[in-house]
Image (cartoon, rainbow, N blue to C red; front, side):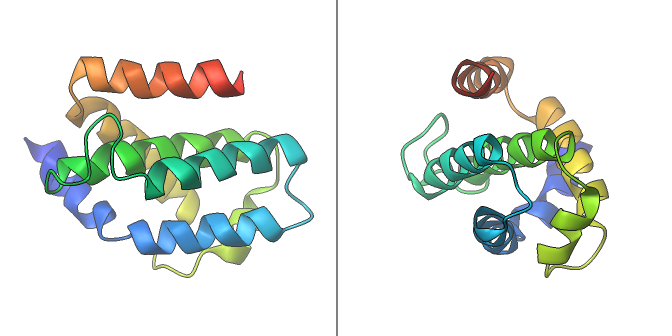
Length: 126
């Protein structure tokens, strides 16, 4: 699968995403409700037992990355893109990266896992 090869480029960015989330949680420009969603994304990312356990190489991080990207995509609808760019320390445009990760994750994850991640996200953060 081409998506899996492409996702490998982004999975290695998980530490940068964690740092981004931390910066956004401290930023006064981020609305409180979005901070709660970002905090939940951090908890999901740090939890080794989730929809695909982190002990499973590569795929264990794909669902984490997908959920984090969904949370960040939601934030993009509620705040200026520059807020995310101000905290991004990785290479490339964080907005484009987020959109690409959501697209690739939707294609690469098994439908049941994708639906579970989306359902969890929508239930908690609608």
